[in-house]
Amino acid sequence: MKNMKWKLATPLLAALVLAGCAAPELRMPEIDMPAAFKEEQGRWKTAQPAEAQERGLWWKAFGDSRLDSLIDEATRANPGLAQAVARMKQARAIAGIAEADRVPQVGVDAGARRGRSSPASLGLPEGTPVSPATVYQARLSASYEVDLFGRVSSNVSAAQADAQASEAAMRSVLLALQADVAQTYFRLRAADAELALLRETVRLREENVRINQRRYELGDLGELDLVRARTELETTRSDAIALERQRAQLEHALALLLGRPASGFSAAVDPLPASAALPQVPAGLPSALLERRPDISAAQQAMMAANARIGLARSAIFPALQLTAAGGGESGELADVFRWSSRSWVIGALLSLPVIDGGRNRANIARSEAALEEATAAYRQSVLAAFAEVEDNLAGLRTLSQQAEAIDAALASARRSAELADKLYRAGRSGYLDVLDAQRNLASIERAAVQLRGARAANTVALVRALGGGWQ
Image 1 (cartoon, one colour):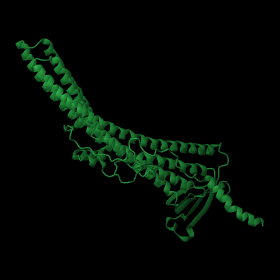
Image 2 (spheres, helix red, strand yellow):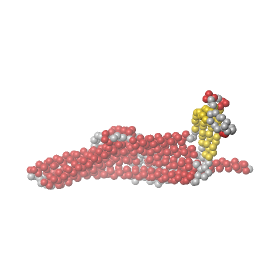
Image 3 (cartoon, rainbow, N blue to C red):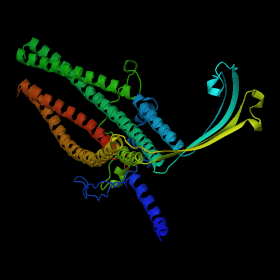
Image 4 (cartoon, rainbow, N blue to C red):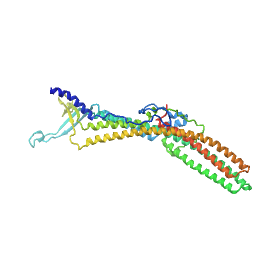
């Protein structure tokens, strides 16, 4: 009866021991997701990372062949992306190293040794002459750790999760690089358009100064109006010079993204026209798009790796069983090493168990559990940040679109105002100050319209990035 009870209790005891050292079941953190975005009234479901899902060439939606070639070049040559790819390769190699512990380790060694033993070590009287001897050997050895308590499997799981997190991080760097290239490119083109506008304004100001100079010499105009015209000219020139500096900085930033030295790179002047078509983001975007965000996937994989390391830390307080075997030949003559009579072999099993470690293993378990708590919080932060970024960029596109409508109406009014002011001035019915005010107001609104054009393009790219790379 006692034997029967023991037979029944043994499997149960083994199951309890294994459960104690295994990694806990990973529970995804609960996140209070909104039913819908404030900016988009479509329904949204809980996000599940799916960063390996095909994104497509999202920048093709802009229909710009030059942008296509720039992103192509950056993908090939950007040093930051190359670093991320190298880190991914390292993580994959580490996973391969961990995976190797699942199979027996087999090795071959061969060699020779020559030495002389003391008479005492051979059980001979002191002074007995002992000749040196040479021993040749060839041996095949094998070792294998029996994964009794999940140390090997937990280590493999952690390494694989690290590798997947590293790949997701690489994809995040790639997406960020593509978006940075596109945004810098559109900002550069917007700066070109604004610079072209300022240069035209400078030309008109120069013409005004020449006309006013002639009228002043003829006595038709006071010096005050001439001085005001010159002031406007120099102020506009100063604005143009400042914008040239800004353009140069954008050009250098683009060179860095392309992996080129800034001193040897020049971007062709290509003003962003008012007719530039931007892809339209459809309404009611599904939350499944957020599942492809690589930073969310990286955070989830980091959480899985931390969870596996709890199992690894727990296994350290249980016995480890190492099996070893070796066999081969040893002989004083090289030709006799492989003879049957020279054979030797050994088989061993080593069971090791920590007895006193000063609380090291328990502390390591506590550290691993705290690391999981940190990774879980980081995952929650990634998901919440993703929703916030999409909200920000949807709101940005909405308000920029409304601004564009308002600025178009203001631009039409400002142009008409400048025309009327010029006619009244030429007819002698108003002063030159009215003309300057109207022209200054028109130039300011024209610059705002150009800046808004660039902002809308950059914001569209930012939304694509926030969605994980497109919305198809």
